[in-house]
Image 1 (cartoon, one colour):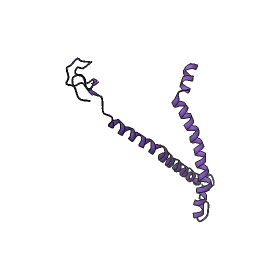
Image 2 (cartoon, rainbow, N blue to C red):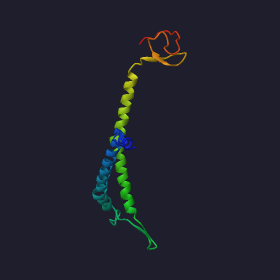
Image 3 (cartoon, helix red, strand yellow):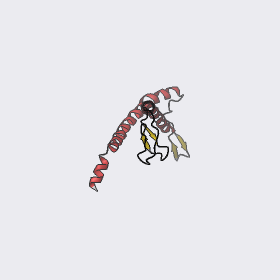
Image 4 (cartoon, helix red, strand yellow):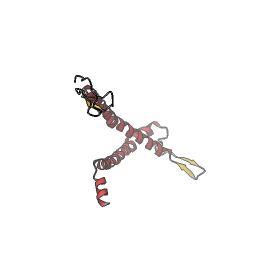
Length: 139
């Protein structure tokens, strides 16, 4: 059981995921600081009472809703989402598109046998799977 667990933990994708979580947490703290220290003062500078960040709604002196904290979290989420989209998702999509174009550019060296639908070389004159006689295709 220990060997299986060790093999699981030392797999590349598990280690990559752990690194991604740690970096994501560090990035989250940077974004939270950006929102708290730079964006919130800009927002409160435009509000008439200067208390948007610390906005609260109190109902019956018992229920306190910190909507300012919600706004802070929403701004942080949007910043993280924009950064992930433009610096992770977009480059990966472009790389996948380039890879797909290069695959299309490569000429296929195999074809399907019309009788058994197995993959065979284009130049083959006889199917290796069903022994059917075929006309060779030019590569």
